[in-house]
Image 1 (cartoon, rainbow, N blue to C red):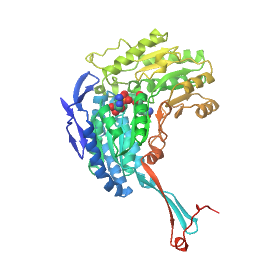
Image 2 (tube, rainbow, N blue to C red; image 1 turned 90 degrees about the vertical axis):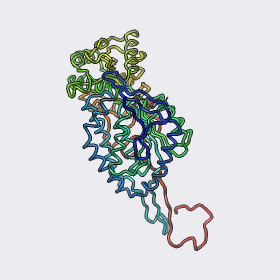
Image 3 (tube, rainbow, N blue to C red; image 1 turned 135 degrees about the horizontal axis):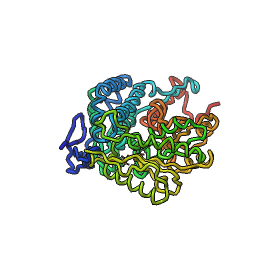
Image 4 (cartoon, protein in one colour; image 1 turned 135 degrees about the vertical axis):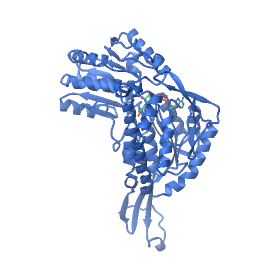
Amino acid sequence: MDQIGHYIDGARVAGTSGRTADVFNPATGEVQAKVALASADEVARAVEIAAEAQPEWAATNPQRRARVLMKFVDLLNRDMDKLAEALSREHGKTLPDAAGDVQRGLEVVEFCIGAPHHLKGEFTDSAGPGIDMYSMRQPLGVSAGITPFNFPAMIPMWMFAPAIACGNAFILKPSERDPSVPIMLAELMEEAGLPKGVLQVVNGDKEAVDAILQDETIQSVGFVGSTPIAAYIYAEGCKAGKRVQCFGGAKNHMIVMPDADMDQAADALVGAGYGAAGERCMAISVAVPVGDETADRLIEKLVPRIEALKVGPYTSGTDVDYGPVVTRAAQENIHRLIQTGIDQGAELVVDGRDFKLQGYEGGFFVGPHLFDRVTPEMDIYRQEIFGPVLSTVRAGSYEEALKLAMDHEYGNGTAIFTRDGDAARDFAKRVNVGMVGVNVPIPVPLAYHTFGGWKKSVFGDLNQHGPDAFRFYTRTKTVTSRWPSGIKEGGEFSIPVME
Ligand code: NAD
């Protein structure tokens, strides 16, 4: 049985708390490793090492820091297959999807190579007689990140790449469900030239998270995961005086207008609803056809596509569309919610409850499900299912469809499928959701834009990656300077004003 410890001070180390969690192979249901769960003391030790390493890293000029990231990109490409395999083995997603997970993180690393440019301050020449004013962005010190199971490569990189590019040391507390890839990433960063102690990985659960939140040296905490934990971490982190950004759950609606290309909409829904077994915060989980005729046409197109989905282990290579969900508990919760949908009167058009895979009976597989005639009071509409279950809510009009997306408590992503530019424009402008797709089902912004939802999908103000990341991981210092005369002519006692 593999033992997965932590990555501290440039080396893999065993845990000392005596507590561990099981790491499953979701395709077989077997426990394939035990991951150490850090104690508060182990977190404190990592913070001490980070605080020692950080000043020298911050003093390394930004171009040299960026060169480490350049080399890291090469190493990610070199080890892409190895990383994808390790990721699939613990997460369950298909190999091409796992490579995509690494790739979308890599793209943020590429963006962060521009650190020397992003960190440039502002300068005002002659703000007053002989007075110059300039600002600079300085690192915070030690930052920490707490990440979810569903993107074990991408989301850690979204955090540590900008944090480290800005001159911070970073402590990553990844999900205990799939802890191998984060440690591999830390090793690659050091192979790329990062001094030891600047990036450390501490595995753990609530105990490690609480230790991070209470630690006085840690200046900022980034979190991605479910909304109740996001709310907790935001409140506790802010209470402790830290800079905090937390990204939570989602229930993404896709509006299908009567004039949409129905084949394109159905293809988009199948990919966005069932890809990665629906375990994506940007998955589409609610289809909103406008008008009964649109709904009937859409369902007719969806059913054969959904019934044709190939579900299987990642070892089947490109021959599967999606794999198992992450744990038995996740599988049971999805089945429980499906049952509430049936009990509360939704129409189960594609029923995947009997799905079985020969040879993988113990795996955490969930067959694809499609519900029609879902209403906003139902649990399957209100809650995030995070599984291969698409709900259809029939809207009578465009305004009704828009209102559905607006009234839902989550506001991560949404999409509209239409040929009408005016409807698309109106939707993009009015909807209270952070990321909007127009004939694009999963509108995850590229690295040089920012990523973030609205409403209960986010706590905090700055988004992930793009220019916001450089703001989150630095603080601004503004210097007002006057050379060489002025004071020697006598002090000023009233506040200076510009005349
Ligand atoms: P989760 O909230 O269970 O866990 C996330 C992290 O929090 C993990 O590192 C975990 O160890 C830690 N954690 C869990 N329980 C805790 C507790 N009681 N106290 C302190 N820390 C705790 O989320 P998950 O199941 O790993 O990920 C799925 C969720 O993440 C979904 O809700 C999904 O929508 C969301 N997500 C959101 C985004 C986004 O950008 N908005 C991106 C990816 C995933």
